[in-house]
Length: 369
Image 1 (cartoon, rainbow, N blue to C red):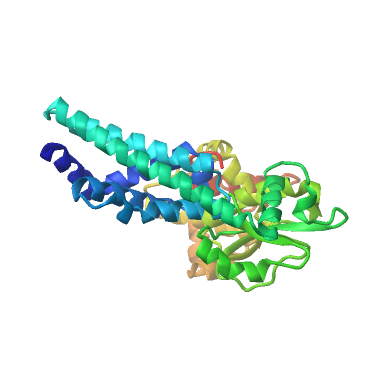
Image 2 (cartoon, rainbow, N blue to C red):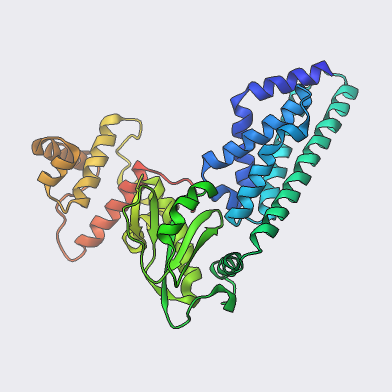
């Protein structure tokens, strides 16, 4: 089947194949989409290489399918359900098959049919391997007391009832801390620093999560979001807020320990992008996103609001002269209705609306978090 093999060689060499399969897998499952793009792309690349090597290069699939083992093991340890893993796999499989159909015009139907049957058999073998390794990993993890407590914690944070197996004291309040670490081998480096004798730490929905009576002490080189202490029955709500806040903080390039309440404004902006776009359209219609000077004006106006209207602090933050800041603010006022010195009882609301509009204009969010 030289014709189909040539098509697959072209697809293997095309970066868009990996990008497309990764996008399909992430679009099929919210849990997979929440994982870092690089994590998903690395696993997808391994699977594509295994199948293409088996079909094109005639390499034994058993020798090259260790990528499937790593993927299954990682998702089991991360607490990603098997159903979510398989949803991503099937979506990627469908994308590849669709791409093959679109590139096989002119080939003999018999060749295409026989080739697709062989590819389908290889994909089934990979899928069966994913299921087997995932279940084996789960069984091995379930043999410890920590694993039993972690499973109970996962259920609790996902909205389930409080179980005695979780090992938390209903009389105490606990902080939920989410760490921007998804690779199990990296998570192990932080677990000891986050675990307390009266708390629990482990992978939940793909990320390292700690539930403790005190906020962990740093410094940390990675991003952490810690919620205020709440009763056990309210931990699920704290966890959901930490999940969303982690995405907002990551978008802004933040690192280290960040308090959930300190991210409240960023969280509001990112969870209501449609409102942000409306504010930007209403207040910043005179600015062109493609104009670099207009970008500078918006950045300066945002810095002005965030530094309490102190032009000297803005100048220091932006590494420019105070007169430059004043000039940019005047130009901003000419192009928009921006008023750097609002007065009256609604001055705070005025500043907040402008802050939200500028945030949305400078770093637009295209979908709800």
